[in-house]
Image (tube, rainbow, N blue to C red):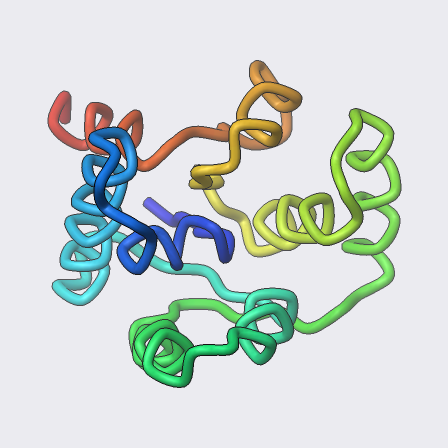
Length: 145
């Protein structure tokens, strides 16, 4: 099983944990990362993850996300296919970077695109090309197997 986690998902453990939803999502992200480190789940990565993470103003957060790179199964650079798919995905109402993340997940053959972004979750609910879910939903799927 291969997953792609966008930057808002990767950053969730560093968000303010005073709200229960954020705390639960953070725990789910950390659990998924444990499964990735144990080689039970494959992690896909992209140039967009690197690009957005390079603008993270907090060195420790940036470093913690980069610490996942040794566990990456597949990493993609920009391709014509990604750009074309992103243009189509963007028509569903997503921002350019969000559409690029989804297109990268598709390009790398992911089964799941995991995000904490409500707009992406709403706009791509039922998206046929890849299953777009929250980290909590993904944990439910793991526990059903």
